[in-house]
Image (cartoon, rainbow, N blue to C red; front, side):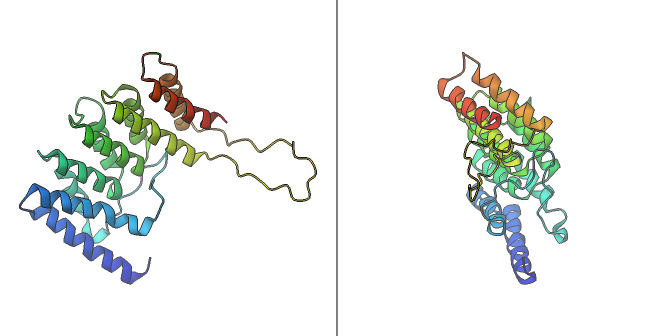
Length: 227
C-alpha cells in the first residue's frame, strides 16, 4: 500500500471514528460502524481471515490512533442490537487478540449477547481475527448455541478456518508421466487446533438429536478435513 493510500485511509478512519463517537442517533452510530468495517476490506481484497488458527491478527488501526480500538470496543455494550452488530463487524476487521476475547464472551459463556444477529456477527468477526480464543468460542457455539443459525455459521466458519490452514494438496497435471494411478501427496498433518475442530465437527455429525441439515454440514466439513 502506497503512502498516499495509507494517509487517505487513515483520514477516513478518523472521520468514521469521530462519527461513531459523536453520532446523535443509533442509526448514525450503526452507519459509522458499518463504514469502519468496510474500510480494511479495500486493501485486503478477497482474503477474509486476518489471523490463523494459532495466532490472532494484530490490530489494523494506525499507531497514530492508539486508543481507537478501545473506543470502538466500548460500543459493544450499546443498548441497541443493530449498533452492537455493526460494531462487532468493525471489531472483526480492526481488532486483535484482546478484541477476540471480548467477542468470544459475547458469543458463548455467561456474558453471551441475547440477540441472535449479534452472535452471528460475532461468529463472522471471530473467523476474521482467528486465534485460540476465537476457535474455542466458535467450537462452543457450533455445539451449544440455542440458535440453529448461529450453530450453522459457527460450523461453516470452523471448517473454513481449518481448510484455509490445511488445504488440499494441489492437483498436478500428468505431463510426461505415463501412470495416472500414482499415489497423490497426502494432506499435511492437522495441527492440534485443527484436530479439535475436527472433533467438534464429528461430535455434531454423530449427534442423533441435532438437526439433520446441521449434521450434514458437519459431515461434509469433517470429510473435507479427513480427505
